[in-house]
Length: 148
Image 1: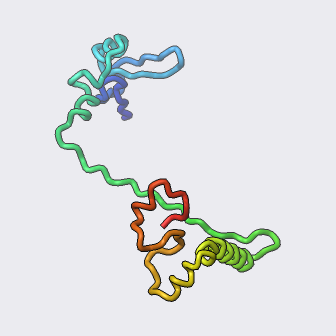
Image 2: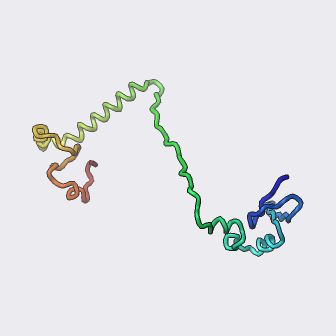
């Protein structure tokens, strides 16, 4: 025995009971009673009619705890490129990072701050162009340089 669901109220429509309404676009609607079909044809909203299942679900006092949906995080994998194995690619990336770091430190070395910093205790912030004694907030306004 296949029990259908009323398209308007959400109640059950048992076999050989109710009405079947087919729209012009071949969409099928099932109704348990003439009251449901009449309200549907008047274009009434079932969310605003108190006795429908939709209304009852919306205005239920205690809502059930919805379990948080867990989604897998995408994991990036490095793959070889034709003609170069993974070790060669990793070595070239390290080489590029070292070159970039050297390029970033050149202004410090020219100004002499690099030598001063090496002689002192190593500061907590790295890769900055300003002296570490200044507050970060004061320098941060409008600062377009490196990030902390």
